Length: 375
Ligand SMILES: Cc1cc2nc3c(=O)[nH]c(=O)nc-3n(C[C@H](O)[C@H](O)[C@H](O)COP(=O)(O)O)c2cc1C
Image 1: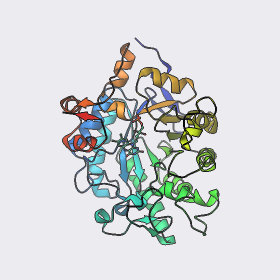
Image 2 (image 1 turned 180 degrees about the horizontal axis):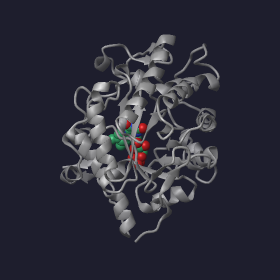
Image 3 (image 1 turned 180 degrees about the vertical axis):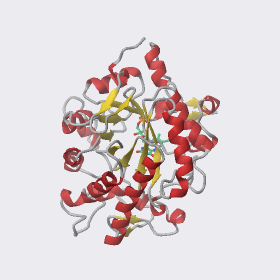
């Protein structure tokens, strides 16, 4: 029996809600929703199986808050009350296993394909994103568009609470709409939504405030950020993301989730400066420092083994969020609790993934991740 610290419960102060342990399923797009964005049996089985396997917190894939923010075919929607029955069934299924159920609420911005929305994508500024030169050009969001986005985040959170979810995670990471406003590489506006950091983070803060006003005080509200967003950013831009976290904490937030892609990455590596381990701080340490124990800190990025989870929690993170390791190992937390457990690395056999409640559409999607699936 393992008594690692990540197996202890975690109480969220403001809301009084408690997670049974500190292992979260990170948001993972799986393209298994029905064409109208409603929950399918594949989506239900994928998430409830991880709750059954002992994940203390289960997060949905990025769910679009507005039809114009839909990122993928088969994406989960939370942009209409018509989707509530499926969302409610899913929340009930996750919570039946004692896990906290979170919806990741999101707007794709420039990365929401025009053919899905029937409209050109919106972003902070017109054109393509840095590094996405083959992507579709976005149009600059107007004041009305921005007000609509903020209202859509609030309506999505209200729906999540009405559907029985424990909380929401606003997706401010990975270069989608909220991150497109945050980064000076994608936001070239000169109005109150662009320019200095205070202006670039206004959309995220206003969306957060609107979400808070739309739900009860028991409902968890967190934000996911990533320090590395667009190619070509310098250390100042990377460090800004940690300043954003500090501001959000001052605004009052229930958790911050840093998506690091690899928890061992140093600041220099994040800038493309090669391996300078020891010479510059790890992004993990900067995340811990920025949060300063003021609210629970979730960290994701190549947490594969129980030793990795123990390492990130020993460094000061409160929750180890698992992405890829949770795909072949739905019982990862139970196995970690039971004793020595050494999860294998990819590639994984397709039939084993199917047995782990990975539905056919998700399996097809995973075949596009190099070296993940065999057979
Ligand atoms: C198939 C797949 C889909 C993902 N979809 C999302 C998503 O919808 N939202 C998000 O914030 N991150 C998404 N991510 C990133 C993961 O949440 C996680 O941060 C990342 O995979 C690093 O953690 P890992 O090394 O444990 O996989 C996705 C990752 C994978 C592998």
